Length: 399
Image (tube, rainbow, N blue to C red):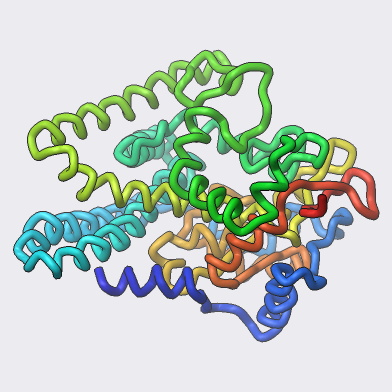
């Protein structure tokens, strides 16, 4: 438990790890963005390489999925979760009152991180990266995501459209930036002062994920109200609606189980054991997604310029140090994941290493401390506007 907490602190305050000297030099340029200095933007010209050429550079075994290996990670995470839960139920209550005050945050941090890893494994099921059997992937994904109060199929379909339209101002599904003229009048008062900016970050970390699922906050606009729990919403097709009902049933079943636990052991017992770690999971999801797609170095495109490959490349790998392993490398292989989402996480590092020479400057990696990176993105990335080239949009914060 203590190791995971140290990992969390290390990642927030100053993650480091697998960067080469050249990448560290590039990182220093990117890190200066927060001070208003010049930084290195990703290229926006159509790349000279093709998706087929990128795929050819990846060893063929990286695309192979193993049921046994995939399940081994599920079992590994669940054993740690069960061990931490045992500690919370047996060891922590036996401690003196003052020591309990320190032990509970340790439990929450560690359990939240490991549960985030389980979330990532369920996410792999949604990409058919868990096994060669689609039904098995869907069953495992439904169970794991439902236990984390995520509507599995509902999010699977919206997330699939995010992968199909990454970087598109018109069709991307999540963290779609607004143009300056579309911002509400109060925007400068929130983002242009530290108190408002901090409030925005806190709201995002605590309510951002449930608000996206329930209200489509930060998602693309639709003709009418959109909700991940609504089978008849405009987000879903006729063929997808039955599975959205199944997703709702999964979340409802877990919610009812939590209510039974609350009646048996008390509301605050459930909050301490499950609720706070889940809040940490939700915060990690927001941080991971936000920082992967919201960065001053990353472009967005309108329909006149967008194509799938450039959109998929408009994302950022992030080195979280020791937490890379806890999160099954979802942050430091994000570029490869957007190019080939069915690659299992246990091959993603090898695939990333193989494609970096092909991608060259199109590959983006950052290792700034999470707190600094989040603050900078909230400060610098308020709206997008075209600059030297029509159809290519960059983040700005000038009012």
